Image (cartoon, rainbow, N blue to C red):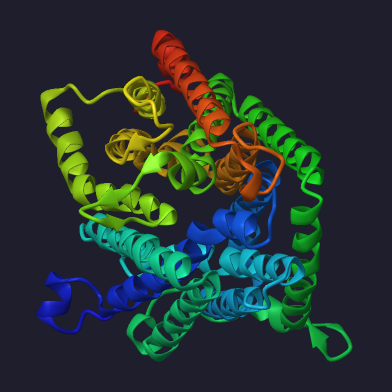
Length: 491
């Protein structure tokens, strides 16, 4: 970190803004592809709703799973700079592969994006942390600025890419997302001198040692990354394999966490049991939250009146409400937690999880409320506005504390495994979310949907999700004291 001038000491490192814009355009790319994916599968590739939802769930699940491996390979071999550059190239290639217009090109492109995102997303936030020395008071503020970049990229994707993709053609939306990824690559590369003082950027010595003749570990990892693309293709195409894969990995991680805790004594045993419980709660939250990209988008397309003063909002564009509300309310919530802490009224971690899931459930029940006032099988757009508002406030109760909680609960010796388990919960959640979305859809393609029957099915599934989530929230609240006891003072 360069600190040769007073301005540098008072402000943030120049490298932060390079990383801000690199991450912003990477999120523009990722969310730009994701915002169109379900509608592209249903409308262009003529997939049934259920099949499209399962493909979406497998894809997003693998994206999160890849981040666990991408971070470890960067730590041990690649260094953060090379890993991010490799990831950016693979993601851009993946976006442009989708322009082939067939299912094979789509699945291949998704495979490249999965591997690339695993390298990019896992490591760029690590560099942000390494721009600051230990106990630097600017660190939290720096991550807040970086988090704004993530949401600006998401907001641009769910407005600009969504609009262009639906109005002018999906291929133009995917192409725009691809150019966004190229922008991220160029900004990160040409701004490399600005973050050059961060530790761990360079390729590790272990990666340069020969393994097979002139081939070293770095070569093997790059070749292995390319070979993983067709593997992802198969896992998305035959996504039932992931049922066993994710379940097996979860059981292994849960066992390793609890057994490691047992070895370190009663306190750590209890904390690891609590962590596994919170991982399960996290899976529940995000599996339902991630309906945004599947069932809620198809619901918006078929059963929501999206006309605003004569202009009809594209269905995929309704996903922009979440990042917009994050930007609006994120800073308000961060100030609120500080003030509540000073007043001694900051809710415990279990109660924050309970409140988050409660709001998520109430968001789904908004659809049931507005369904009572329509006889045209269309609800007004305000339905989705209120739904996403409650989902976003629920997210702000639960999401920001997750990573901090993991670092507090896990002993240093297994902090990496614990963090991997936390990220694994997002992978499982996205995959399960695809299965939940499949319950709302017909097997036929979009052209054969009975609007009335579809409306009843959406409202029925959404209301059931809402009631179940409210019940889970109440259960967590009732169990908050035992959970706090398991955590042994961690707040």
